Image 1 (cartoon, one colour):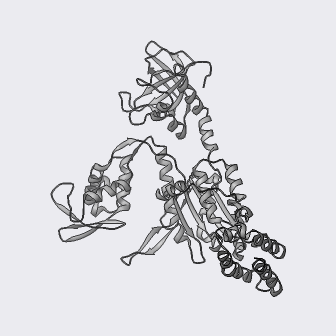
Image 2 (cartoon, helix red, strand yellow; image 1 turned 90 degrees about the vertical axis):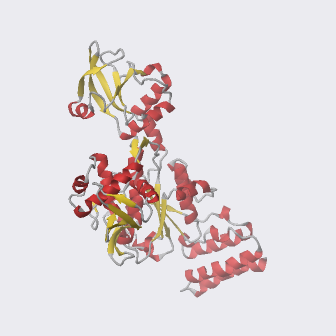
Image 3 (tube, one colour; image 1 turned 90 degrees about the horizontal axis):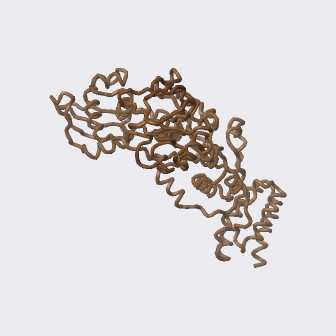
Length: 518
């Protein structure tokens, strides 16, 4: 961008008399005889604002020739999706754009000039990225009671609140006590941006990614697993956040359709010569009655038709057949009739979709067969592979990639012998944060006992077996302490020193000594 000349903003309406000239600009790298309404000079930087339903600055160009009523411009750079989103009409208004035409010399509005300049120079984008935790795969591990569950919630809350990476990792690794912003975590749960799963010996790829499972009607059907579902939601959020004008998604349209057309409602076919009746809704299809015949209209092809309409309009049943590559040919009329009604709920609106983070929390990750559960996705979860690399899933044959706004947070018990099954592939792709007992969080009544037992355990086993502070955090009375010692600590010591009676007795003596002193 030429720093010595004023920056101009020119508007292009892709639905106007010129048509959409963007493909031509990108193909040939210049545009001749661009109409001008303001004075410009050779060498001047020009930003191209795309109006109509786009309303974004999308190109940086430079004036190469000036005529009486037009200019020639050459392409300097096509802005990234993120830059264009930051230079949308709504964001320009927030940073000083005044009412009236957008065709003006940008230097006349210093506030807006500085904002646009920072976006074009990537300063604003860099600042936004600096606030994000770039490490997407994290395992919290430690002995029982060190607060792994508390810390995964704390970790998610701090990511959402834009804490720096250094602050997040320092707080979590030191196991510092931070009051959870419960409203933050609860908000994420309510928005269904976090999923929780526990791995075990029987957990499989089919549960996690996709697989064939029996349905309620007894048929074997392909179903998406928990990871695939949340990855699809996260990816949809990325797409929507970069689209300045978006269509209401299929799920929203379907919900409105079901509200309007209750069971027993009648619809007309494309030719209006016959009617059919909505007889049932399931989680996968709409059941219809045509005279005495029953048919099932699946949501999956309906969604495919809905999305195809964004690229090429669906105007008749033949378009439905073409969109579905010939599948469902016999029911094309009914698919089209339902789709046509759904379009009535479709509206275009100015994008207010913010880019958000999604989270999947895997408890006891080391108890599952990780290589089997993740399958081919073990490569895709790497930070530098997100949004870019994709694989073809073996069952559905769908293309699948892991989005960059999905965090994988796992917990692991360091005393569990199955920790040895964590292979190199997983270790390389996850950042491990060790949780240690925090003496400051132990109730004063139990602090001395806590320290003495942990000193003994560390000397005779190792620090991975030390007692967690959560055992002693809710001690309100001597009775509470005795209960914890008898029913929580004693069984743990029995397990730790099962093969060594002498050390077990020594540990029990430490446990009982405090009661005698009291």
